[in-house]
Image (cartoon, rainbow, N blue to C red; front, top):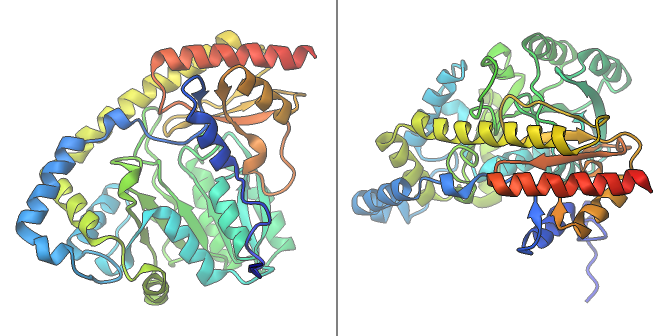
Length: 394
């Protein structure tokens, strides 16, 4: 049977992500590719205890259908989390989603028609690019520097694309670069979006994992007109296998969002919502996040030390204040050749080309440090340094 696929279905099914998981499954390969949290930090015992309480108290309830926006107690707890993040909101403005990835998909389905322009940081999260493309969007990248998206460049592009549907940004410890948008840029971005009448999709899965620098409030904090749609997740502060995230948006948006959420899956897994809510009631999540940030700070610093030790002196890398990623730039190097040489040396990364809307900057790649222990980081970066020297010397 030959299927007549929709335009958004890619011709080739092999992806960067699937290739990385395949390479990473080889025990000889040290993978700095997947953006995975450290599994040894998952609060297994506490979540198990919460699950037992939920089954004892709400067994029949949690196995039944539920409301599309999610378990109300959990949504109230998220209101408290948002207040800690300097955002005042109401329960009616919070929707539970099956990982913030689902929120990206639903928001895209709500806003994008084929041919519409979406403005993104360049580079940006590769799965968001794939989702936007699947709905027929034309993705236009906005250059970045160490302070995040260049707002002056954004204004120029808005003049060229005044009907852009939304601006997508990851302001905290950005994926893939690890960069953090400065507070002045955050304020400017919100004002630019408001003036142009273009919504902002703020993706914040890493913001709670800050181990250096000063806390910066989300874009949503500066939004007084409902122009910012805020996304976050329990994937990085609890466990990604829970597939639990949330969205905060203006009421007029939420009134339509609920219809699309119903069409997607009726509601996010009810049992998981109750378990996470019980966990938040029983455990001090701030102590748990402190364990995560301490570990990631150590691993990030170790990786940067090893990069400075083993990579050529002209190599540049970002210096993240949180999150899980380091962005590396090796001037004048073919990234595809470097990837294959690294694979031959049993170490892998994510090539920068996967993260760009248009033409990729050569010699760029993303490293993940959260899922590797000290010895793996030391040995893996040493192998990469050898591979870079091989490619540069050719």
